Structure formats: structure tokens, C-alpha cells
Image 1 (cartoon, rainbow, N blue to C red):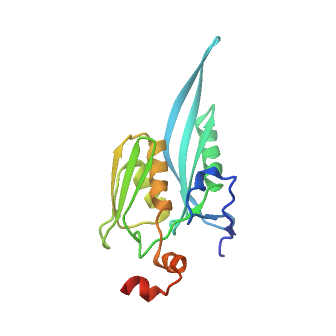
Image 2 (cartoon, rainbow, N blue to C red; image 1 turned 120 degrees about the vertical axis):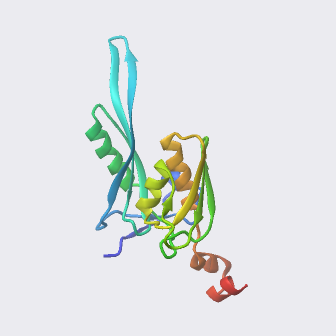
Image 3 (cartoon, rainbow, N blue to C red; image 1 turned 180 degrees about the vertical axis):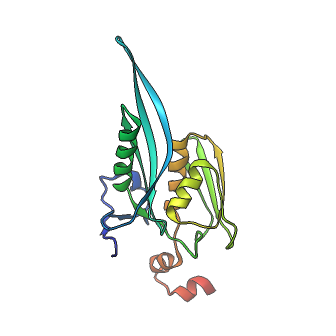
Length: 187
């Protein structure tokens, strides 16, 4: 069952600056959720401290569709559930070529910088922490990456998404330029 395409509606501020972002509806997809991190947050009130939890989750079908979400609640389980629901509302399609990326790309968000580089088959996912979680959810099997600057998982996930959303496959480049695919490859 082919997932329905969703027009890039501009009330979704997260993907406004990406021309090639293709939003996807989660209906009928087998999505796997991966927990990136859970933080305990404290709110100090005059009655004492109120503890809560914030969770960041990445969901994907491991075939090029991925999304991330944030959930906050008084207990961990409901924070994760809220994060998964939020992630399903923000699904995008990422172009993949034979289990890796079409080209090298850099992404940044806040103080986090991420560089993702396509790799030959058999390399595996050479990435750490939050970057690995996102790339595995997308379905990338061979990639090299470097994360610099902030290691805050929220910013690293968003920087990775920044890099992934800038990726363009050969078909998209050919249609944008109005030329055939062999002209893209042969010059």
C-alpha cells in the first residue's frame, strides 16, 4: 500500500525552508519508533519541586520515511507515547540510493553540526548516538558521519534532519533543471 503524499502545507514551520521536503501521511505504514533520549525536567514552584519528563523519539519505516517528535509528561511512558504521536505528524521522505545517500551533506541546528557522507556497501553505519538513531530509522545501511559542536540530542537530531532534508536524488535534479537523466550523469 503506497503512503499518501501530503502537500507541503506552510503551517508546518519545521519544513518551510526545504524546497524538496515531501511530507508523508503515516496511514498504512509499518513504522518503528526509536527512543533517542529521556530527560528529567524540574519546575520549581512555591510548593516545592515538580518533576516531569521530556522524551525525543525518531520513527521511520527503514525505507526512506522518517520523522522526529518531542513529548513531555509527568511520567516516562506517556512522554514517550506523546513523542511517538508527534513524530508521526512530521514524517518526510528522504531519497536513498542502494542503501546509502545520494551525496555528501552538512546540516546544522543551534550549536550542533552534522556531516553525513555516503559509503560503499559493507561499510555499515559509522555514526554515534542521535545521528545513528536517525540514519537507522531512515534505512541507511552504509554511511560515514561526523557530529561536531553541541552533543545535545535535540539539536543533533534536528541537525541530522537538516542534512537529510537537503539531499536531492538525480531524478529530482533532472526535473528541476528540465533535462534528461543521462544529461545529469554524463555532463
